Structure formats: structure tokens, C-alpha cells
Image (cartoon, rainbow, N blue to C red; front, side, top):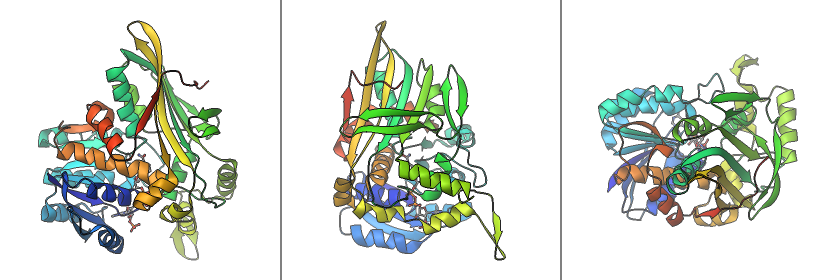
Length: 399
Ligand code: NDP
């Protein structure tokens, strides 16, 4: 049915590419392009031979001209950006220049400030609309499935949703004292930033990890979780009717937090460049280089993830509570695609988002967050492609 150019060949891209190959009716042809071409070639070698035709290319996604040349050569129907958030705008520029649809999983972040906001990407709305192309923002799990869950809850269960708590639990154990489950630089920027949530239309800021709760996660048990800022709060507060408060919590074990505090205290998580033996280095980028590669965690990680949303709102004048979540097993993911569950839960929705555009099930020129589309075909594909969802009408609530 179509051609996808996938940019990036890391943990998330690897899962997405496995899943494209499991969906050859939709993904007839893919090109894997990244900075290090050998990683693209290794993925091709692993997956070649099926019905999806695979090619590879080298590209520096910071360079719009290089991207435009590659898009013109391969002529895809959609570009799936699974590089890093720093490349979002250059890839969107190249999509505009070539009139090609765009999908990503994380909002743009400037390299020199850890800021998670949609304003830079929302500034492309009119230009994408005029070009007749669709940008689907945030098609991972969170953001991504959490937005689809919200749209589904709104469509089928509520007249208005007043409270959303997004709960992201990773109860996986990789056996290392400290490692991150996706790109360490992006992960540490996210968790060492101030927390925040939206209440009555206003952002309320907290110190990093200031708000802690304990939650009894289905199929996992009790875990400590902490309130973080997360990008989908900004779009969901606008797109879901009736929101009074929306929060995001993520679980962290004590060992992770103790290591992170220590690294912060000695300056290793800083993104300010420093002079080291005559070279400028960014401490956080150096830290990334010495930490385990998230891709290497796959064979060692045991346990499950549980990510979902608790909704409280009104239906036919009555208060109603609804919890939608997915439980994913690290070892099962590794058996299937050779990656742990954090890459899996992001790579599967990235494939599904691209499939929605390729099949024309979603077609809305402009720049849109995922909850702006009809959730039903996406929810069906989650069940079909390895992320089945579960629901509860009487969940424990978060204080
Ligand atoms: P990785 O670091 O494993 O992979 C990133 C890939 O992008 C690498 O192949 C890297 O190339 C490539 N890349 C980086 N810079 C460039 C560039 N300038 N040009 C071309 N390629 C480049 O990251 P992950 O796979 O863990 O994460 C991918 C994305 O997914 C990130 O944006 C992350 O924020 C997002 N994410 C979203 C989640 C969600 O639920 N929404 C959850 C987890 C992640 P090289 O191999 O040369 O370094």
C-alpha cells in the first residue's frame, strides 16, 4: 500500500521496523536511514527476505538538504522520525519541501535547553495544511497510546473528562545498578527537569521528583511513582473536553534515584558544555557514552511494564471512573523482536501511526497530536500488533 522512510536505527526504530515487516500489506517498501549506516544494514540483514522490500541509506538528519535529497530519491508516502527530538524540525522542513507526511514519537527539544513544548512544531500547522500533508505528532506510547486512550475514553465512555492521571510503570530489572531504558541523554534530561501538571488551565511547577505516590499496578503490584512534566499534558489539556487537572507519574526504583542524585550532585547530568583537556564536552553526552547502551538491555531485562490512564469524568450527568492500560512483558518482547519493552511499547505505536496515514484511515492535513484522530482503528491495531489493552471501571485512584 505504501512506502515509509524510517529515520534512526536505534532501539525504537528497530522495533518499528520489525513491526512494519509484520504488516507487509501496508508497508510494501521501507528505507532505513540513519547517521550510522552499518546499524541500518544490520537491521536489513536481519529482516530481509519477507514481503516488505528494505533498502538503507546514510543521512545526517540535522541537514535539511541531505534529507530532501534522500526523500526525493526514495519518494516515500510517509517519513517516520525515530531519531532524536533534536531532529524534529529539520525533518519537518524536509517533509514540507517534498510534500511528504510526517510521524514522530517525541516533541522537539532544542539541544541547549531541556524544554518540552509543542510550540515549535505547532508553528508548522498552516504550512502543513497548505501543502496538503499531515504531521502526526507523538505516536509512541507516552505520548502516543496515552493520547489514543484519551480519545477512546472520550468517544465511548464520557461526555466530559475532568481528571486524567497518566501512570507509567516500568517494573523491569536489567541487573545493572544504573542504566536507562531509552536514549540516556533524552531520559535524564526528562527526569532531572522540574515536574509540572495542569490544574484549572494553569501549569503548576514542582521541584524534580517532589511529588511521590505509591500505586498498586495491575499485574505488577505496589510501586513508588513520581510526578514528572510530560509533553502530552500540554496537548491533552487542549484537546480533551472538560479537563480540570492532568498529571503524569512515572515509577523509579531507589537505586536509580540514588545514582541520579549523585550524578547530578557531581555535575554529570549538566547540558552546559565544559572544557576538558582542550576539548569542549557536554557532561551528559559523556555520561551517555559510559552508560550501557539501552539496546543491550534486551537480553537481561525481566519483568513487566504497565502504562495507562485513569479518567474521571461525567457520563449522562453521573460521575464515572475508567482505567485503560497495557501490560507488556520485557522477556516476551525480547523473544519476539530482540528488544526490551520500553523500545517495544514505543516502536509498535510508531508503526501503527504510520500505517494509519498510509492506509488513509487518518488523513487530516496540518500538524496534529494523536488524540485529534479517530482512536478506533488504532485501538484495533494495538490488539493486533502486540500491545493489547485492558480496562477497569473501578480502579484504585491516585490521591
Ligand atoms: P536511540 O539513541 O537508541 O536511537 C536514536 C537513533 O537516531 C540512532 O540510530 C542515531 O544514530 C539516530 N540519530 C541521532 N542523531 C541523528 C542524526 N543527526 N541524523 C541521523 N540519525 C540520527 O534512541 P531510541 O530509539 O531510544 O529513541 C528514539 C526516539 O524515541 C527518541 O526521540 C525518544 O525520545 C523517543 N521515545 C519516545 C517514547 C514515547 O513513548 N513517546 C519512549 C521512548 C523513546 P547513531 O546510531 O549514529 O547514534
